[in-house]
Image 1 (spheres, rainbow, N blue to C red):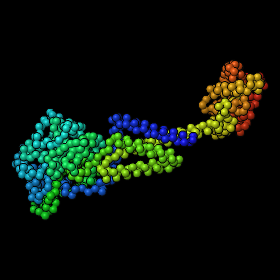
Image 2 (image 1 turned 60 degrees about the horizontal axis):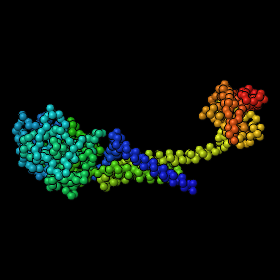
Image 3 (image 1 turned 30 degrees about the vertical axis):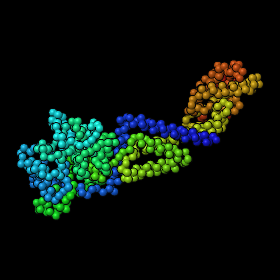
Image 4 (image 1 turned 135 degrees about the vertical axis):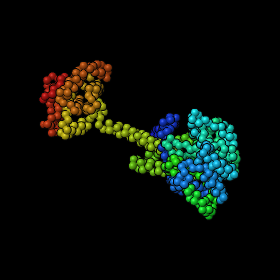
Length: 597
C-alpha cells in the first residue's frame, strides 16, 4: 500500500511539474528576448529540415533563369559598355525571345529613371514592353527619407486586386513601406504588369519567407511572382480569409504572424535551369533558332543578375549565396505547386510538449536504470525529429522542435531530481536510523568508531589535527535512583542538545554509551578543544534541567580532552587517553575539564 501511495505521489508531482513547466514557457513566451532565443533555434531547425528535404524535391522545369552571371557581365561590359547596359539591349533581347513563344518574361531588374543620354534606347524598351503583354517589370519598396526621394503616387492599375474586410491587416514590420523605387513613368504608361520584388531577411540574416502583399500609402500592391501566378492561373481577383490569400480553390498562400508566406525550398543555387545571358546574345547574333526554341519556348523566364559583383546575393535555408532572381522563382514555384509551409501555433507546440514531458515522466517511473532512461530520451528526441521531417515532407507542416525539446529535457531533469529527492529522503531516513542514537539523536557508537578511524587516517596523510572530547554526567546512577529513569532520559536529551549547540556542523557529537558522550572535533588543536570543552562544561553547570514532572534541577559533567599526535597509531589509543583524562576529572572532584592524564 505504501509503495502504491509513493507511485501515485510521484505521478501527481510529475504532472504538477509538467504543467508548471508549460505555464512557465507560456509566460516566457511573452518576453521578447526569450521569443528571439526560441525563434533563432527553431529557425535553425527549420533550415536543417529543409536542407534534408530539398534533396528529394523537384522544381518546376518550365521556370528558367536567364542569368547575368560573371561571364555574361564581363562579356556585356566589354562589348556594350559599363553597367547598367543600354536598355536597347533588353529591348533587343525581348523582341528576339518573343519569336519563340515564351510563356512569361519577368525582369528581376529595375528600370527606374529615364536615360537622359539615350532616349532612343528607352523608347525601344517601351515599345517592346508595350507590344508584348507577357513582359513583367519590377519595382522595389523601401524606407528612403522623403528629402532624398519624394514618394511617388502609383497608378491604381498597379494595386493588388484583393478582397479583404480589413486592408490594415497587411500592415506590419515586413510589409509596410514609406517609399518606392518604381519603374519610370513612360513604362508605367504602357503596362500594368509591374510589381514588387522586395524580400525580407529574418533577424539572423536568412530569408525564409516571401511577402505576397505590400502596404504603401495605405494601398496594397502585389509581389511580382504573385502577379505572374495570377495570370498563369487566369485569376484576376484575390481573396484573403482565414489567414490565407486565396487565388483559386486549389491555390492558397498561408500567411504566418508576420503576414508573409513560408517558402518550401527545392534546392540551392541552380535549382532552376540557368542560361547565361552571353550565350543567348550569341545565339541571337547567329540566329540559332534551334537553341533558342529548345530553351525558351513555353518557358517562364526570370531575367536577373547572379554575379556577386552586382550585390543581389541572399542567404536562404538551403544556400548561403543565392541570387535574388532564384528566390522570386522559388516563390512562383511554391504558388503553382500550392506548396507553402504552414507553422503550428504556439499553443499546439505547448500541448505537444506537455504530452512529451508526461510520457517521459511515465517511462522514468517504470524504468529504474538511469542509463536506459537516458537512451530512451535521446531515442525519443531523434524519433521526434524524424517525425517532424516526415510531417514537413508529407503535410508541409512546420511543427516546433525547440519548445518540445526544451520541455522534454527540462522535464527529464526535474522528474529525475524529484525521483532522486524522494529516494534520497528514504535513504537519509534509513541511514539516519542506522547511525543515530534513538534517545539523544546523537550519532551512535558504531558511527563514532567509523569517524574516529576516518579522522586518524586523514591526520596521518595530511597532518590535519583533530581532537576528542569525552563527557560523563556526574552521579548519573544516583540521579536515576533519585528521580527515576524517565527523568534520567530527559537529562540525557538536554545534555545532548547542549553538545550539538556548542559544536560545529563539521564536528561529530556521539553517544558513547550509557551517560557517556563524545565530540570528535575536526581540524581542531588541543588549545581550541580545551576551550570548547570548558564552554560546554560551564553551559551544563549553568543550565537548569527540566525533569518529567516539571521540576528544575542542576547537573554537572566531567570532561576529558585528548588531541591526536604522532604517537597515536590506533584510534583506541586516543580514546583510552581521553578516557583517562575523564577519569582524572572525576577523581579531582568532577564538574571540570582535564586534558592531561
